[in-house]
Image 1 (tube, rainbow, N blue to C red):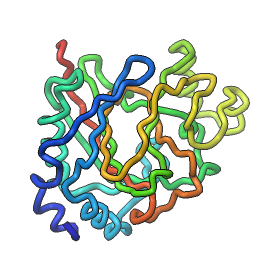
Image 2: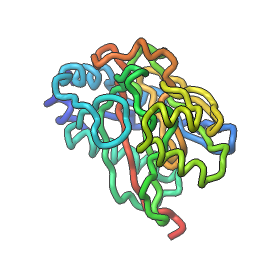
Image 3: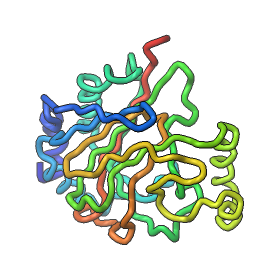
Image 4: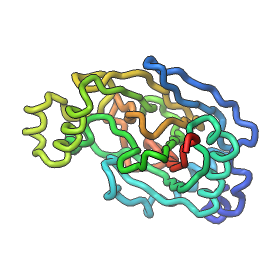
Length: 248
């Protein structure tokens, strides 16, 4: 698995066929699922990503603070098969309607972040009530100080949180800071609007699945370690799975 061609040739052998799945409880009664040693050849996948560094592009379609790279179709198919076989039944998810995935790297220095990147987010914006979304992140870096994933719950009424999200996309940074008091930089702790309910530490070849409607954020406490080099930076493999809910 040392090249782009090799990644595409062996999709059925990409994931561990007998993953150890651990349900991790969050302090508000929520949960996520964690699997270690999930790829059969994580170094091969990471090496392919490093060799494809020139193809990575800045994210310009959402607030993700970094770069991304689409993977070969066979890799997407392998992730979809893994989700259907091992994960879908653990969530309120009946039929998979749509899936997309990509390699990604958090690269932006804290001082360059926009207000919408100063706090947690959910992946369920625009989702129909009859649908659910699950998300996954696979850590492909060995330096655990680059950070795992944290989960949050709102502490203010829904209308206040909705206005905060709207203002984060329209107000100038200094105005947003004055109005809400949320400090610029990467979120990794509770604030006046969101409470930290749990953190999954990063680990090489660890994968986390969670409800995409749950507020979450990369747990980045050492932003000085961020880099745009896939060989040493915060390289992850991210998936998003839109499903029909069981109750419909």
